[in-house]
Image (cartoon, rainbow, N blue to C red; front, side, top):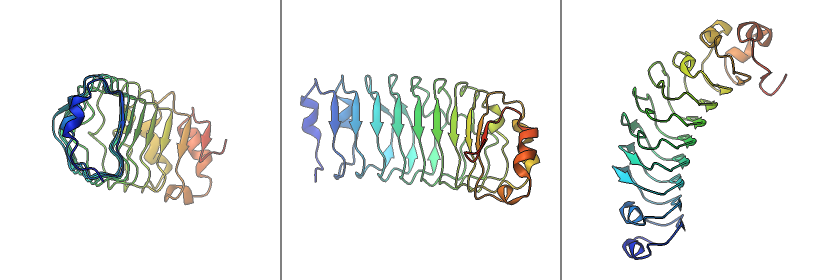
Length: 231
């Protein structure tokens, strides 16, 4: 049950650190390890993500902490960031602007109600985004033009009623809307121009209860190959 990790800064050549399930609350000592590539602090006591810099970090796991807000992360080589199962309710605009290599971002199981414009600015290489199990109802201004390569988004288990905003994700291939409040096939008509959209998940939604809904969706979203894992 470690709380004080200040001595770690003496180990300048460390590449991988795993200290999950401890009582660590401060990330600062880890930022002083210049070559650190992989940091696992799952299940600790971290509450804030104030401006931090990781020059070489590629994988960061901060799931199951107590984080309530994200202010700024500077990690130009970071590829995978797990912030799931925290208490995050606010992401500052440009929080990830200096994480241009990020490919996978997991924000599931948090307290997000809305996502401010420019929250994901700078993430031009992001491939997979998980926002499931939050309290998000509106995404109209949440997704920036920077998300040009986003392939897979999980919005399941949110009270979303409209896909406005998702239509900006021009490379989207997989869209998970399970357990949302989407009601009618025409609610998805905004997505008709997404030429790479092939996989759609709508189970446990009002939409999925409708007779013949899959046939209607195939006419609206002509590139679909599977709905709820069925061709």
